[in-house]
Amino acid sequence: MSSNDSHAVNETRLRVRYAETDQMGVVYHSNHLIWFEVGRVEFMRQLGFSYRDMERNDQRFIAVVDVKCRYKAPVHYDEEVLVRTKLKAVRDSVIIFEYELTLAQTGALLAEGETTHIVTDANMKVSSLPQKYLEVFRAAVGK
Amino acid sequence: MSSNDSHAVNETRLRVRYAETDQMGVVYHSNHLIWFEVGRVEFMRQLGFSYRDMERNDQRFIAVVDVKCRYKAPVHYDEEVLVRTKLKAVRDSVIIFEYELTLAQTGALLAEGETTHIVTDANMKVSSLPQKYLEVFRAAVGK
Amino acid sequence: MSSNDSHAVNETRLRVRYAETDQMGVVYHSNHLIWFEVGRVEFMRQLGFSYRDMERNDQRFIAVVDVKCRYKAPVHYDEEVLVRTKLKAVRDSVIIFEYELTLAQTGALLAEGETTHIVTDANMKVSSLPQKYLEVFRAAVGK
Amino acid sequence: MSSNDSHAVNETRLRVRYAETDQMGVVYHSNHLIWFEVGRVEFMRQLGFSYRDMERNDQRFIAVVDVKCRYKAPVHYDEEVLVRTKLKAVRDSVIIFEYELTLAQTGALLAEGETTHIVTDANMKVSSLPQKYLEVFRAAVGK
View 1 (cartoon, one colour):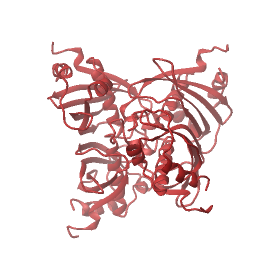
View 2: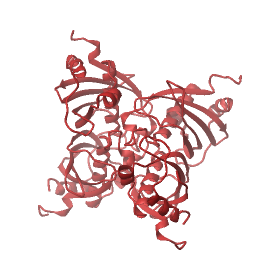
View 3: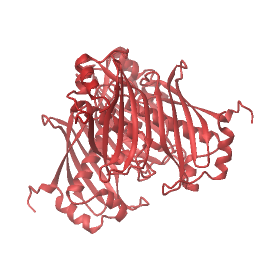
View 4: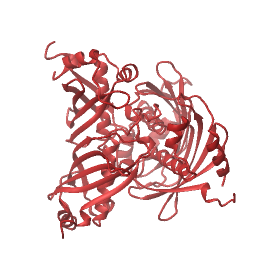
């Protein structure tokens, strides 16, 4: 697979909702984590997987164990945000995603983040990614 | 049971969170529904029930089928809100709650609402309230 | 303007986020109000207006004073929801929107709702819609 | 001021809301950031300040520029969470808070986090804490 593999980065757009703003007139900072998740799900869809099916059919869950977010610029109501998601690392039971939020119109950096996940079964016990996911995830790391 | 039965109305206080405000400088209107639920759960706790246990142990769920809310005055960050919850009606599989939100400090009316619920089992099929809940709920109606 | 004016109904799609679900395994019911707002904003954009600019440039706000929602079917994670928004009524300082949420894939009805708004100035005093909005809004009623 | 100054750590309790859970049956991870803020505001109140007044009267805002959260155990609906907040560092325009979330009933650790803030004016320009806050904050660091 070449280093510019189009599967390796997902770009998803979303528009800021009024409910996501706070009285400072900008997006409240916990919403960035929800947007990271939107990116993560679309990243997986681009790889050919549905996280919904992974939960339903394979009884595997990707629980968040660590979150980091650096806020670079305020985000405003009705702006279009580009969420760029990529895989930083994958091991049997650990997955690390990286995110970049930019303003779609100008490319200005809004925030950067990283989430670490462990794979669990339906009882929240640490488990491992089914082979079919693991292979595709590994091929997508760091691209 | 007398008409001024103290079990018949629940009063719960909560403080407005920054995350609940929007860029208009007031609480975003969907949060009132979340506060109604806080009131509903405390109402049940006051009757001697835990909604958590009802779900866990009795496999009964109270799904929302109808919501009405009239907003009377804006609510601001850090204000203390009093949620008054009472039961309007109970039938085997239908429960109707009424709510009043007031500003704790002044008693000013902030919002009024009503939620209608159907009782379901874990598969979202219409079911009925277990007898132990039904009796206590019936005694608390309209008080 | 003809009665089947394409400006009169807005259809907007959104995908259910994980954060919008609750432990019953379906979308928590306050999110529908947020989706109504997404529809409302897109409805206005389709009419040629930006609600953001109305706030910024004209200092007019559309505050929610009444909300009704009837939930017809549970909505699940990752489903695509179609939000149909139309104007029910417009007066100088009052606007009533109607909404229909359906499952994009099947057309199944998920919820119906209505929101009533008053037009305010930046100090939350009742005001009226600037003429440029009022004319276009009136033309779009009930279509 | 002694090293066990009771002003130096704030402990606030909150009860998990249904709306905060997701379909995994536990609290969705972005809510922890909202709880950190609840702790932060109560910490300031304990020091004798109202963050609301700081915004209103002094036109100073505490914008989040960095968030870290490590999730140690899932949090469930209706559980009581103890938020312990303390100040890690204070400089003219930078404030760093630390948080610990534990289960009130057992003391079990649920999450640990840290938020870094810059002080801004109403136009989001970097500013500094008014002297009256700065002195009290400095006295409370690391206690």
